[in-house]
Image (cartoon, rainbow, N blue to C red):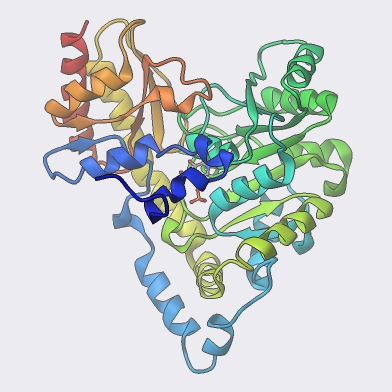
Length: 410
Ligand SMILES: Cc1ncc(COP(=O)(O)O)c(C=O)c1O
């Protein structure tokens, strides 16, 4: 049956060109397949719900909806965000070496929203976004709508700045920002050293572009010493956040709970003010009651709760690294992260992560093939393993199954 010229199903022919760059997330499609209880899944990238601070949120929500408080919690609020929460964040950032005021902070609906806003703020079509190879695919998804070109950014590679600029110009735009995760990156788990962070700042300075520092996993450190955020290092160098080109993105998703959708951006005031205008146009504000609850819970249990997560997830990371040592055949390599939620595996050349997944699912074990984390879809012989969702015994069993599947494919 053919659709009539005016059928609503034909509306897709009217979609703006930018929608052609919006692809269904491979991870989300995958997660739909993983509801079967006998599959051991290392595919997700989410916190273990058994460790949500549920009681603290229950109490905070009850308090927020009490007769005295509901008039504020259920009401519209400012676009910048709930002031007491911004003040808690000022303290928190101060503890990590970032001296700022509440006017340097915007509360967003998760850091994902900040990524979208920054794409909207900075990217004209064909402008260049410098990203890690591989990078967080949700960032690529957020930026794609603004039709950028991607170029590889590797703080260790000494590619001349002039070449990066010339390539950006040849593509019809300018280099607008570098987007990087400083700690325990999704998907690799890798952390930038202080030297690398300083190199990023130096190269961004030379390029005259912004730095977007994604700190979603910063608190989830299990071993090793904290490295200061790039924004803190830049403030040290320049003396004032108002002189800085780094835009720091934080999130309560990995520490408290992602369902509340509360994150934040920290930057020089003109950037924050422009983001506030973007927010006013997009969704007016982040949900008032969620910000009030997060403020209450953060002030009550943040440090103790993060300490619990470090213990639980740290043990799971150790279990995964030990299982990989035991079960992976020769020729397979993986990262040894100091925190976060992921280990990144490189298969022997010629072995594809996506094809391996088909066979792994038959063996009842799942992961995310790595190609989707590359802006150019390259390096398909990689995969991402999540360890935050599985207790040690499951990790051992799942990695043993995966080792067998890989060995069989060699
Ligand atoms: C690196 C990174 N940045 C940002 C996000 C988005 O987190 P949220 O919007 O929940 O703060 C995620 C989520 O997985 C992530 O892995």
